[in-house]
Length: 368
Image (cartoon, helix red, strand yellow):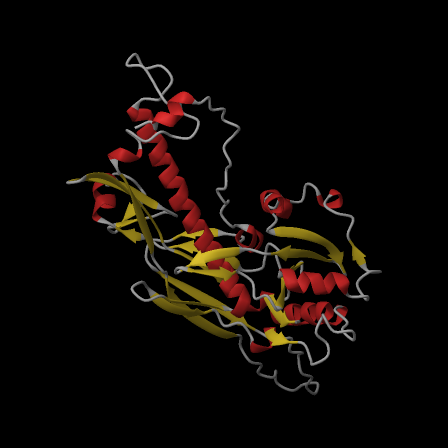
């Protein structure tokens, strides 16, 4: 119902403020180099280990010396499950006035979209919101593994799991006392050199990026030893690189900032907060910096486990996306209607799990 006061005054729409946050994808797009959709719910990660062992010498004419084999390990992980839904009620689109809609419309149909069009818009809006929530959780999973090499989730009334990818203990450490980046005697190049050495020795790949929390970035830029070596000419010298194509939106909303190239490593500030399990969490530890390899052979991949659902089997029986009674793909969506009260439910499901066959491609230092 239109309030009587609204009939008497002239209203000018000055624009609609869009405060819809984009889903977080910086870490996921930077580190994940491959996606796989699985035909089951278990991911197996196999690794080969072989150090830089030199060949031994033996006297001329002697028999060949026996040398050791490669070491191998196999670990299995069950993919977590995300299954979320939201209802659309008749009152959501039949009687309520949307932003930018007129107060009145004639029975002839002028000025206001049909109920069918409004319902379709609500469905699209709901699907977008559910998809964005899943993408935010994927980013949190990647950040968790980058923080500690593990994913821990324990929320009362929801799921609980712990996954450990086996990062070497030396790759998650702290700088020595008095060497913190906000101390006068600190020298950040030490951490850049040490991280490059650790990652190269463990995984035979090069450090490409340094990701910093906002407090760490402030301390980094204030350090006197940085001024002469930091190439901070901005983004112009990096335009066109693939790793920047996903960065513009986040730069616009202030959650990430390119700091410059330091000792051949691209430095970024990333200040993203996401609600997980009802609590707001910083994706990055506010006292740490992270050295990572975004090289094509960094071993990171996003796995999507199969989704068991009877509706998927019924609706996709003739599709290659259903095998062994499970839906194969990144997402599975369905909709159903409850009669009393009438509501249309929209459901979206996914079973993502980021893993890496090279757990040593990340080095994290506590620098504050």
